[in-house]
Image (cartoon, rainbow, N blue to C red):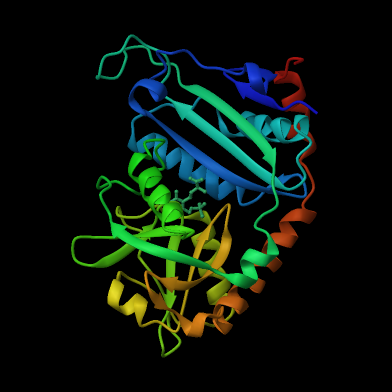
Length: 303
Ligand code: PDD
């Protein structure tokens, strides 16, 4: 089956989908994005992702390409046309097409691209085996709370991790505190059983999975601290894990050369994982809103 992408008002075949070479996303990385998991044909935590998208747009003084109800409809239509049951949905908005010049164009029309693909999230053996992370200096800008498509430092960090045989790079600020991973949020459990993750300021992306896991921790009655933690504290932790839409919740069993929790996924990590999974499985059962479906069909065109 051939894949279908949504590009600026049209559903087109994936291999022909394209944007203009003067698109400001291409020229300046002047845009924002969201990645949602799809389970049972439904986007997971859709409203939280759309809230974060609106916040990112507003911080960059960009207009949304469309209002939320038709956008939801487009997302569902892209999932439907690609026959995705479980997978990944990608949405990107940029400041549109204009002659290359740094200031915002006078009449910017926001570009919108949406794609979806099937994926298994993540393979169960990864969950059991856990992952290794390396640490690197955080060389990113000071507004990591905005989910911008400008991801070069993240790309370089992830590549360095892969070359070192690790799954992820945890980024460390100038004072030696862990900010987050190149594409994930970072968590530890102290030896006294306290769950710690960095507070959602401007130095990390406020992960949607992070929010879900925080709620899972509250539901489980786990003591929780949202604060920066030093790399030394991380290496001395009883447990560590990372979270993201595409990784869900993965145990971290080694940070650089330091083995965490005897090299096995910890009890609290396991509890949180199962509580979070329970929440996700209820997402699968949610039914599609009929009105949104209708709206999608009326805005669609044949491939
Ligand atoms: N990355 N921190 C960074 C820097 C990220 O890029 C991401 C997500 C996260 C986790 O956020 P969430 O739980 O909302 O996925 C944290 C996505 C998946 C990506 O760029 O592919």
